[in-house]
Image (cartoon, rainbow, N blue to C red; front, top):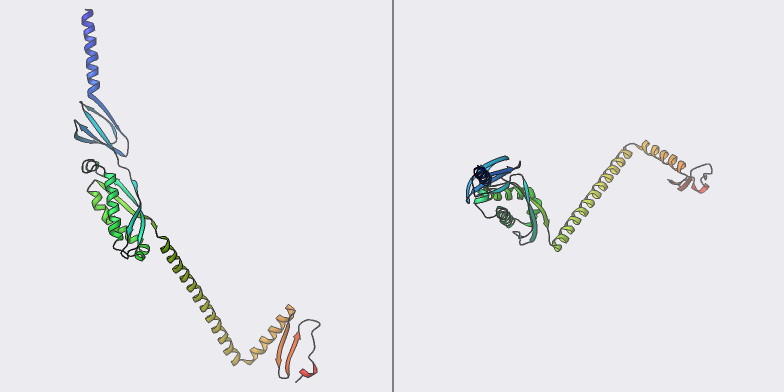
Length: 261
């Protein structure tokens, strides 16, 4: 009887151990998927949640399906007019086919990096330095058009490719600074010339008005005398017998006898 009970216990423990070795629990977090393999062969894709699978020799590979960014820094490129530059790219991507990303390439990150490098060189080689600096939005569209089809072959969807930094040689920086300074100085000179032209036009208009209305000249003279009196200045008025200095205020000088006409 004792032997029978011991044997049953041993058998139960053996069965429990066998069950535990053949029962596998897989927990997949939200935003991820898991590729399940058995004896090295792909079986299925496990989505977010808790999964139980039976059998032995299971293995798995977890994939992140959330959006991510890949920085491609400091790439030395040559423009169409033979100017050497360093550019950095920011590639926003998302894995949409984890099976293809896992089985079509050894390292999809490295492949995406290489695709972005080649697209950058091909795009910049056909542009001049001026076009590169003035048409960055168009360049971004060209880069995206080159990268998306190639990335799709490895199960990755590229959402955006942006030129992050453009590093110019030191002599080219100085040249662009000189050009910008010359443009600003020219713009300032143009504005000054416009102001002077406007002032001259106003003076010419005023001269024509005074010429046609002599009474306005006398009115203007009276305004000048009033302004001089208020400011305490001396006003010199041209008269037929000579110049008469008039000092505004209570101690104003009287015209000399020789100045009378």
